Length: 338
Image 1 (cartoon, rainbow, N blue to C red):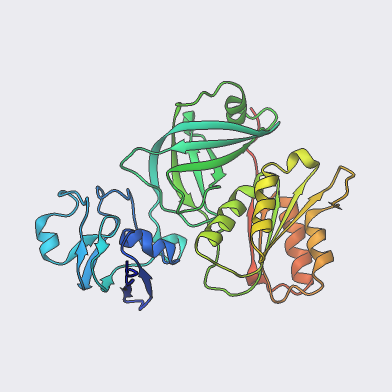
Image 2: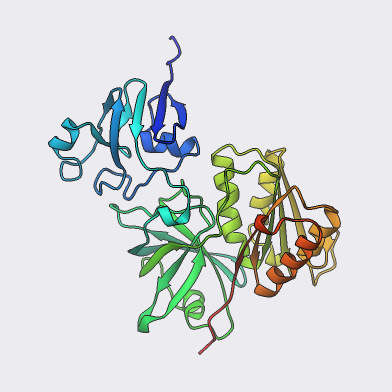
């Protein structure tokens, strides 16, 4: 059988282009190629991904009539989450370049799974309604909406393309009302609400600089999202992941992090323990970065964890040559226990 000739998809007005074999929707093919288009439900119901086909032919797939009326089809519009190319195509669409390009939503969700990965860390998986998807940038966070107007912010640990369930890493806080409920009485299938996405801590994909990730505790969550997104979009910039914890038990999902480094030559993993004697690196995690890199002028750095760690890392990294504009951080602070 002769190989299938790939179709070329060109996005206007940006001029970006990529190829696809036609098996994926135009939206999925764009995401696979590293170009983020607006979307909402991914199943042809909401119309958020609607754009114009300037040239070429598409199969509209399962686009629903109320989201793509006949008049829209006749006018050359398509829902990119459903449409597949039947030839080379030129599309008119807005591309998501920054966090401000993504709408903030309030959505209900169901607790799909609670997996305890350490004594004080639970990985919570949240299932959205069948007609909804949350578009976000790798590294952003959502706020859970609790009773009495209270909110709790948690980073999204899954990559944007892997959005069938949203993953949060919940650390038990002594005296914490919400985390106490998660670890004590919460059951799967419980209904929650959240608002998001939020935050400017996301992967800057336009850069070619090597990346240093520094994660303390559950600050690993957004780093995980960024690394998995980078792998999905075939980013091959050198990535070094420094993870800090008090002891080995604090390096939850350690095997996953190690597997990235084992499978990819451009990824290096450096776990660092502050309170346990072992045969690996010891001390403060950001000091390990300074020990390994005498000159940080050519790097991008993403740091997530406690505010004190971030403050120390910012000052010391900039003193060691890192341009201030290449330091990106997300500080994890906790609500006062009640």
